[in-house]
Length: 208
Image (cartoon, rainbow, N blue to C red; front, side, top):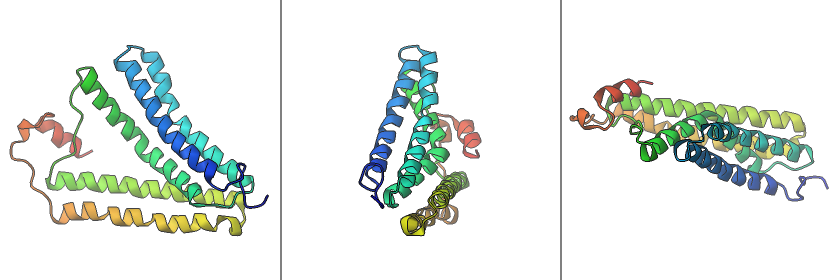
């Protein structure tokens, strides 16, 4: 039936897969880190962690199949593209943070790095985060534009175009944070050596 995806309900399958991918991400990540630091199974850990990006492939494939199967685009399809954009830009960063946190808590590793508390170092950090948000938005738009082109039916893809416009609010709102830290920088703590990472660690990492 026109206007309905392979499940018979536009967007339902995609929303379920998004939820499944998010759950799968944390399950694979947790098992991968536990295998490495608790069970000493580094080979299994590598396999599990390498499998994490495959969830994005599953979601992208499902979205394309659903649309090509005759589904009318809904916000679920836009959310799928946004999820992929976020995963591409922030996924590795999230895995790296989880790895450092897990190693610190269960394997005696160093404390995870923390962003600068104040000063222009914090402003640079916030601008870096905002730039990543803009890149994630750009990737989302590229994915949605590709989906629109594949379907080639404006009557079924109007929701995707509208979603791109609505999603623009996120980088526009997010820019308030780096701007505020730039115009009104917080003072850095005077007792920097008391930080768990050490003064030199904070200075060098904050510029990354």
